[in-house]
Length: 189
Image 1 (tube, rainbow, N blue to C red):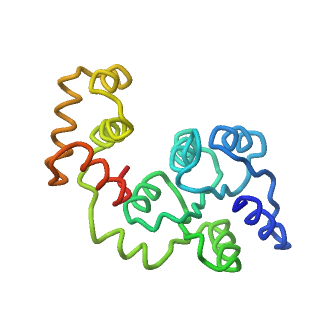
Image 2 (cartoon, helix red, strand yellow; image 1 turned 60 degrees about the horizontal axis):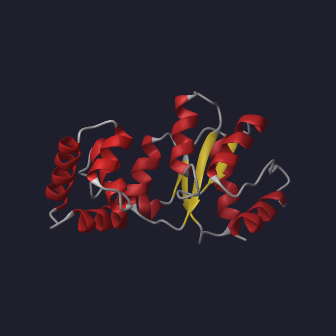
């Protein structure tokens, strides 16, 4: 419903053409490769390939498409990860529609459009986790055992336990479930 409403609102703008709207991340990636749009408007979380995952792929493949995330996740950790992934815009879904259209125009011209309050918060609290700790913690939080995580990431079980222990220590919590919850709440996963 949100995707349809957003597409309809943007289609009302004379200088914006909506070329595709998809339900999941992988189909969005296929449409992006087919249409080669100037801008991709996405959410952080999507089924399959996430919005951040698509932004990273766009960056990795050196595609000219600029990414704008429109989300309900007003978490500084997500913003920091989005900026690291090359995202040019990060806006909240409760912003007025005309603000979104203006932000898309700004990004299209080569600028950035970041929710100002979220930008201030993003630099006040650093993410203490490294990429591997984040991967291991995400899988552990999804219910995977150390053995399953080790197999999936091509690590030993001892290495997986070390990464989990480091993440738990850095976050100052008692176990991996608490670490997962805190890291999700902060937007670090």
